[in-house]
Image 1: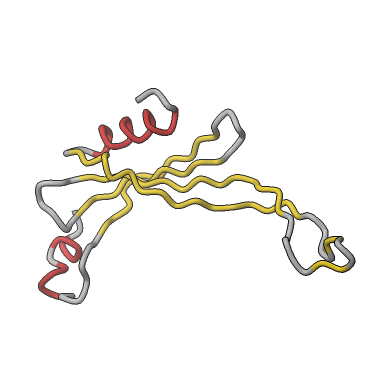
Image 2: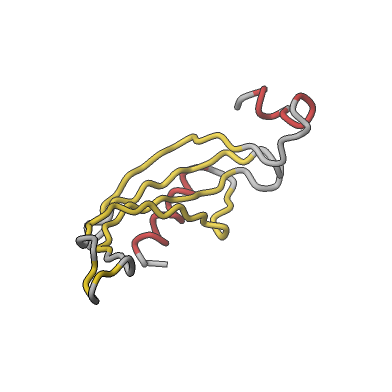
Length: 111
């Protein structure tokens, strides 16, 4: 455990919450979206040891709705990569392995 982070309230009172990323896992789902799960050591509340969050990288097909000339789109359609950053507020555990297991259950739909 980082002593600097454990005592952050004393040294850095303007910080409201502090996390340490203790584990990072990447998986790919059946839709071929890349998912990064981060297990966080939670220093803000001593009763909650670990939390989880994830980012999902997917693709989207975009068509601008403007500008138009003569009813046709001026810009061509584009394929873009999009990053969704999502917290698992329901994953709060006492150890990092349990947090990872719970996060994987949510991502895989088996929860």
